[in-house]
Image (spheres, rainbow, N blue to C red):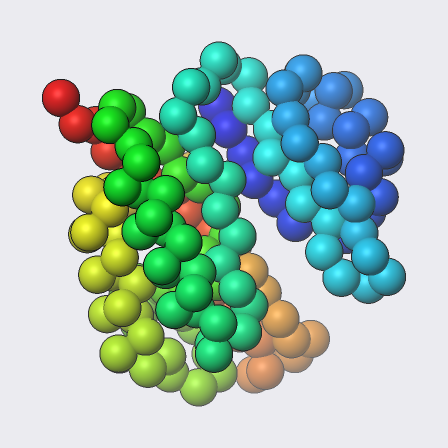
Length: 152
């Protein structure tokens, strides 16, 4: 089991929480002001795991996809990628707000296809990101996901 989460707390506190939850393996990055804070934690001994955080800026997503392509070319075995890609694959992965541009979703699907990554599905809440206070202004998206591939 692997999880990847934006924490919004300092790294020492996150490490204590992670260990208390039984995840002895992990990487904790502290928050800077009101931004960031990341934790990647796992229980199993993974040899080919990439924790991925796509740029939150639309203008930088191509650089994120190029990085994922480069990482994918280096993998020859079972590969697990999980994290916040800051993009959705299909319009039904978003509720509220302005519709996502089809070309951006297509670019994301294309890089996943090139890397031979298959969506691993999910357990629990479908939407992984939410913003807004009132029912009519809430925007929800499935930005976090995991993908795996196996090359024989």
